[in-house]
Amino acid sequence: MKKILSVLPLIALAVFVHAQKLPRVIILATGGTIAGAGASSDRAGYTAGKIPIDQLVGSIPTVKKIAEITGEQVASVGSQDMTVDIWKKLAVRINEIFKNNEADGIVVTHGTDTQEETAYFLDLVVTSEKPVVLTGSMRPATAISADGPKNLYDAITIAIDPKSKGRGVLVSFNEGIYDAREVMKMSSTKTNAFGSPNTGAVDQAYDGTVEYYSKSERQVNPKSPVVITADTKLPRVDIVYMYADAPADEIDLLIGKKVDGIVIAGVGNGNFNKAYMDAVKRAVAAGIIVCRSSRTPSGRVVLHDEINDDELGTIVSDDLTPQKARILLMLGLTKTKDKKQLQNFFFKY
Image (tube, rainbow, N blue to C red; front, side, top):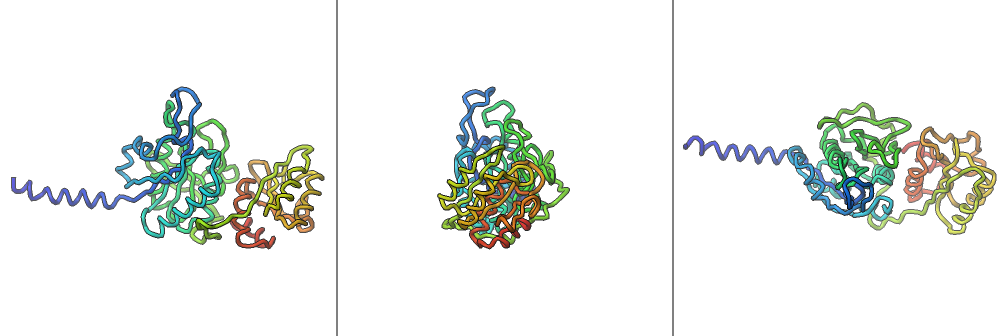
């Protein structure tokens, strides 16, 4: 009996030390389908952002064996209602967490509609090399075969993996791991909703294991180009969509609004019709930065190709989608209005 009693404190100490060694993950919840609740488990209708983060974590109890998990509710919105203010709140909190050594990795739960935009914004403003992983779901938490718990488990697995350090912000979805700059929502309803048309996934998360096969050459972290605070005021940049026989009314409206930048979601190689061409000239003359991008899901917009950008006064998005070109232009304009410097941002980040 004495031997047993003498061993018990050692066992307790070993359990304590093991617990202390678990990597620390903070989950920052913003709402979305992953936290959605519906009236019926077999119907698509639901309300986003209804279920708190503690309940989501509770749906995957085994995760507590691999990480020390805490959660914070940053917002409770469907991602169609994501705002720049929530982006800033996330960025400030993430940088604060890592500066104060509060966690070894961060997972952000997020709706899928604008998840790629939030991921890229954070990739440009997070100052630490520690992992930040976004995830969500296509089915609400109350649905049959909800995909949220598995996606969340995978995201936590990625966030605690040492190989995830220094890879910038990542998106984890349906066992795929995607670079924030390259990822895009590819389906409006399917559970394999995300992909990277130009580059493909950087890895897969499967059965609790993570193995990387590639890394982005446009790495930002930890040398973030823009420092974000709660008081940072981001310039207004709007997107205008080009289509056959499109009138230039919207561009003229934005000129009247005195916006800071306009991204043209052009056809093909960032092209647009004569009406747009004339309106772009008016916008440039008004001091508005105009960036040519493309509505096509892959490829790139080439500087000085079919359009003489020097003559027109425009810059190009390279291979960024219009929605991501808007983000980079917003952040770039906080530093400069020089077109050469702004163009360099698009080739660098």
